[in-house]
Length: 270
Ligand code: NDP
Image (cartoon, rainbow, N blue to C red; front, side, top):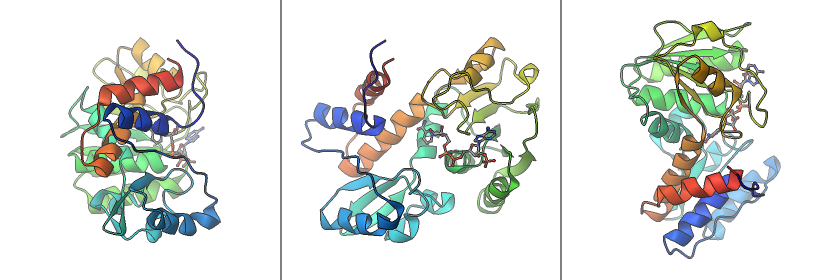
């Protein structure tokens, strides 16, 4: 285990991947105040940026500032990646795609019953991409209906997946019909002792349990799931995959994904 590296994990992965591909490219991390987002987006074009990523709190606010959206970004209503083509900035959302690619290494989502804990930005991207990938049913479990209901309405009206909202009160009991359980909340982020309130006795072998939290990669949620015999998936794969997809969008070539994974582990000091 090494020392974590300061900075941004995607920048670290991307610059290692550019170097490995022999590309003299840079990935900059630039802090932009919300009131200056529109100027910053115009600046990206003026300065000839090939593209960029957007993170919290800009993922939704940037949508009306772009020239076009991919179908997935349009559905999700949030953008984390933009591609500069012929003077136009096209918004994409690679978070959910990255998650689905990672999940496929453990289970094929087609026809599966999936429970998503949370209804924020990550949950929205993950749920929409799972529905697009062919999941049969998606249950959204969230504390507040104000965020949960619009996501369920979106899934029900715009995708073929059946969608249900479960208000999260106390310990959530995972239904026996569920194939996959995903923590898409921020519980566990930078806190290995934080507990996701799920009734431990409803975790069982045969259930795939995934976490979007990547720091620390081994969350308490995943540790408990392993103790109950579940197959588990950490958030590192999702983070690496969104970077791989971004690299492909901007350069038109495939990066060395192993270099990116290694860079992320080095960044996190694991
Ligand atoms: P948001 O702030 O948009 O959403 C947070 C969600 O977590 C909401 O649904 C919120 O519920 C829920 N939540 C937070 N605290 C609690 C709690 N104590 N009990 C129950 N629910 C809770 O965050 P994001 O969706 O942007 O990010 C969520 C996580 O996903 C973060 O840890 C982030 O690092 C991770 N992430 C990982 C990526 C990867 O590549 N691995 C990519 C993107 C994000 P409510 O609506 O009721 O407030």
